[in-house]
Image 1 (cartoon, rainbow, N blue to C red):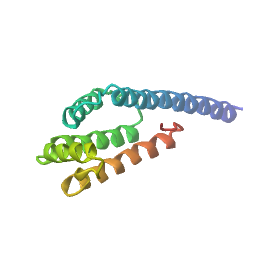
Image 2 (tube, rainbow, N blue to C red):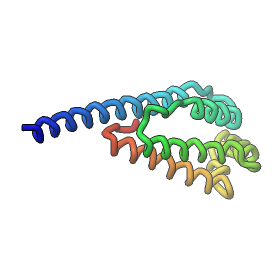
Image 3 (cartoon, one colour):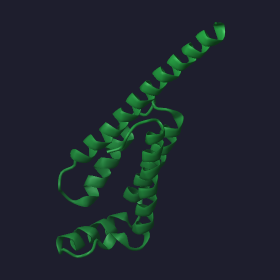
Image 4 (tube, one colour):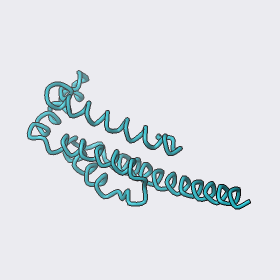
Length: 137
C-alpha cells in the first residue's frame, strides 16, 4: 500500500513539475515572439541590436536547466552576429542586396558561419522545448 501511495505522489509531483516547466518555456518562447514582432521594418543593424537586448531581458529562471542552457547558447549566437566586427558591414550589404531584389550578400563570409550557428542554436532550443512537451512556433 505504501509503495502504491509513494508512486502516486511521485507521479503527481512529476506531472506538476512538467506543467510548471512547460508554462515557463512557453512564457520564454512567447516573449521571443513579442520581441520579433516589436521590431520595426527599419534598418537591419539597429533592429538586430534591439532584438538582442530584448532576448537578453527574457528571464529563464523558472525553466529547466537544459532549456536555460540552450537558450543561453541561442542568445550568445545572436550576440556574436550583432557584435561581430564585420557584422555591421554585412548587415548593410544585406539591406542593399535585399532592396535590389538580389540575394542577401550577408549570407556569405563570416556572417554565414554566424547565421548557421544561430540556426543550430535555435534548433536546439526547439528540441529541448519539445522534450519538455512544448511545441515551438
